[in-house]
Image (cartoon, rainbow, N blue to C red; front, side, top):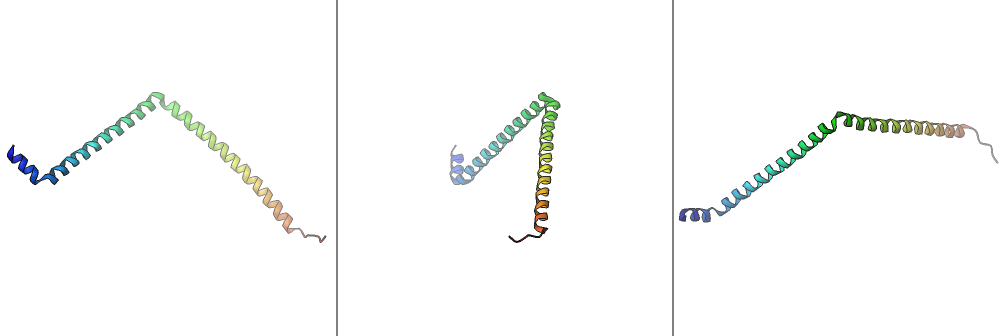
Length: 97
């Protein structure tokens, strides 16, 4: 036991560094394991719900985008009409009052 104590006292910084490094590797391993479990849970959920659920969700998003695009086109047409009217009004000569 004597040589181990003397080695540890002489190399205390190295021993602490190695312990800290082992803890860091263990923590990284635990984080990877937790991520893997989370990912597997997501995959299981998607497999359980099936592709039908995903397709329905995507169809709803597509429908919402289509509605927004239509509204944008309608708004653009209204703005173009207003701009045309303003340009016509600016080009007509004004009569003094």
